[in-house]
Image (tube, rainbow, N blue to C red):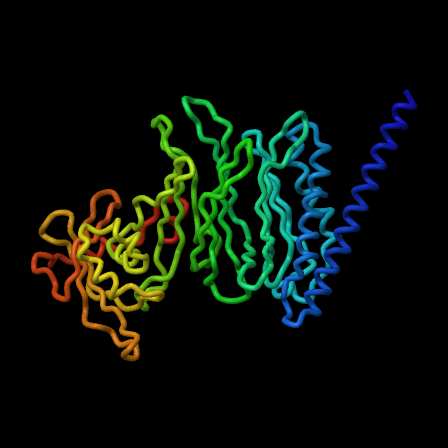
Length: 403
């Protein structure tokens, strides 16, 4: 019996020594990251090789630890222990609010429906660069089936993000999962100043043969807090073989230079490899007009009732549309129609406002909008002020506190 106990003790000591060696190697790599960042010609440039190595050393160390947990209930208890151990590994920064190179953020472990999600965090300039991994247990071992890392460190190609949402969804057909898994991530690049930052939204399908990126988008958004971007992924209940439904809301810049931001709605349906954007694309007549003006005609055409609107779109559309909404949105006497008054700015005349234009918008409940007509004169049958038409709205109850 004592021989067995001795063997178990020696095995445990060997495992602990190996883990200590992993942490020491990670510590050395983080020191290299910090030293190279400090010596860079442009302070804050990301040392690509060392950063990629640090991310994988951190991931591999965490994997070696939860591989030892036989009972899945022990995974939750493991997270605080690992974060405590990592406190001694991250190098101390000169100013944590600016240069975080060589530091580590907390790891996060989540066990959900037989899948384990790991999120790791390595410091860069003014924020962390998060990575995410998903594991499924097979033959008693956790096997990595998906990962999301930012590994392109080139100027203009590096898109680090703080991940505030990693959602997993298993679609069901006739009450059973067919083996597919969908993963949605939401994250943003905080940067050093301002409340305006790039927000990234991505959706993958994971199957037996690997993962496929289906949605890969970004918006420049107002991120006063992480809750200013929110999303969900799922299926419509009660419909056989219904498509996967992705819904995202982000606070982005309004075309009205006097309005701080507006709620952008991104609604997608996924059927196989086909992804299409569907209604709602906005939650008010003004926000719809904003979407219509700022998107390419290929997309705006689907929200128009006539090809004749193409000439107006060509004239008004630009990379940066600006102007002012004038008067309240007006309800028309014809049911289902509203008039939005907007004066675009003329970039060729010191950005002076043009004369007002009048956009006739069809609104079918709950939030189906179409552009009917545009004119330089108001429609006489659209004369009922309707300030409630453009009140702030959301499709997520957790957002209502912002109202």
